Amino acid sequence: MDLRAPDRAEFTLTDVLCGLAHAREFTRSTLAGWRSDATVVTDALLAVTELLTNAILHGLGVPVLRLTARPGVLRVEVTDDSPALPAPRPAGPDGGWGLGVVERLSVAWGAERIGKGKVVWCELPDVPAGAAA
Image (tube, rainbow, N blue to C red; front, side, top):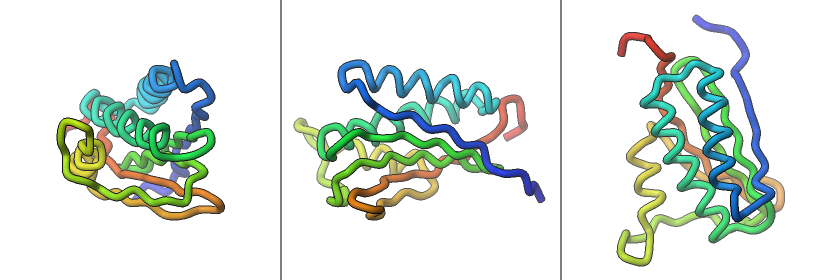
């Protein structure tokens, strides 16, 4: 049993125009430092993009991205100041794909109200780079 404390990192999206690119680079470099497998990094980048895009389009305030790595699991959280919880909608030409993508990538996902806003999260299976799958 691994009793070490989880690794945590946080990024505040202060610049909407370049923010997603910076958030993806933050995710990529953080997971490289944690020696996550390339597949985990790819899945995490997609989840981060979808969750942050939803926070920008439908949330309020300044979104915050939090990554937490525990043995075997990478948790991706995005908080914003809107109390409105996300609701999946049918995918089509005007959107609705994001939460479905997150659901398919993750072993679990959800949303909860916190303070005056909410957190939307997902958990991805994490494997250290070079580990046998």
